[in-house]
Length: 207
Image (cartoon, rainbow, N blue to C red; front, side):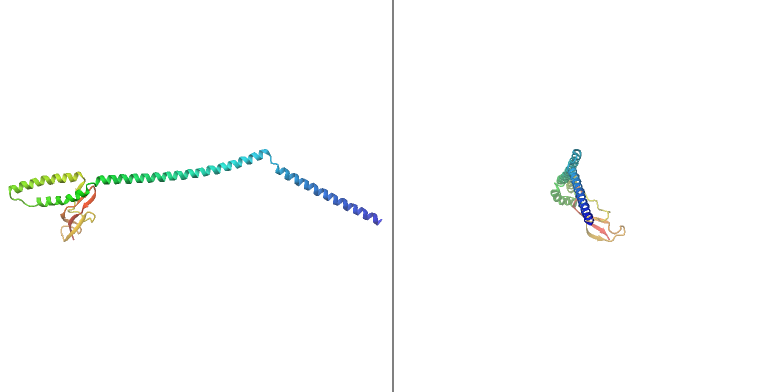
């Protein structure tokens, strides 16, 4: 009786092991089938993934091209700005060359102008002296007209506040008629050439 029970128990254990192996094999087969199914992609899914990949690559290419285009645009703008600055600088140099082409000659002529004015300041008593003085006045008038045509202008100083940009103070004098720092006498006329100081005026200033 006991022997028969043992045999039945063994038989049961064997059947259970066989069932367990069968279940394990079935699960394994299901896993393999699932993996195979996963490996085999649906054609539509493959096309969608390929399209997404292409779209990403195109977006990256577009972004790269846009950056390159921006870089080229920036370089062109810098080149244009450099050219504009060069053109303005060249035009200014040409303009200055025209304005101040006679600067050296005009500067030398100022001494002649001073000599004429000092000579005309002398009083004449004879007819010959008066005639000579009149002739010198005519020459001086023409000389001033020629200088004015070149852009030479006298610096108006008398009664003006002292300006170190256009005045050279050589004397100071107390004055009850003027505030301190006013030009009360011009000892030598100053001149500008197209706005540029050729020679500052030598002046006496109130203290």
